[in-house]
View (cartoon, rainbow, N blue to C red):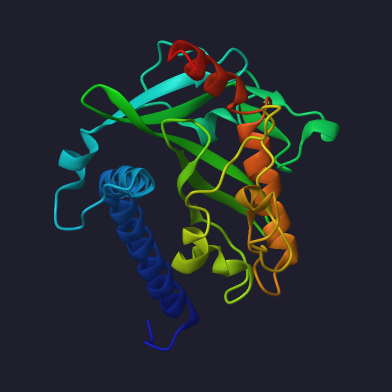
Length: 256
């Protein structure tokens, strides 16, 4: 058979494609445990950052021993007997049996549905609560933004805030990653005197003379819709549709 024959060309191409496919499949299978381990490690790192105790020079696993992981029933605010390490809140949100559909009128975060259960993370020192770290997510302008908000022992003061995954426009909505902007959240108050989560990303800058300045965060220049999305998702998750019942129960247990 001639080296230039059509059959030989197709035969070589087919064999090459088959070998490449097998190599790619083998690599994907072989690397999956490593990818999963990296994913778990990255999540722990993000939780440690939200807790304000992350040190890049120390082992993530060693630092994470300071974090108490639990799973809570969002409807009741009660802890449930579920393996907090194995529980995947994002996966549960896609399971009709493990999630609820959020009525449009109540879907402030624009997520459509949520898991019935949720992860919570506690940082304690000498048995005293120092931080409550809560996972939050919701729609921005272009993407669903995923992050954490950390509250102090009064369960009202923001101690840390940030997103670890989003697809907002770099230089505009993507400024949610800007350390200076995230720093503006620290010390802000979430709940008003009526117990409603009212913290708000405004358009423009917060005036020091504003009597409600403690509940407001400077807006993102040129990214009003992303800022509105941040407001909506934070208010949703910290009100009755999200972690509100849990935080109220936690405050009652602590005699507050």
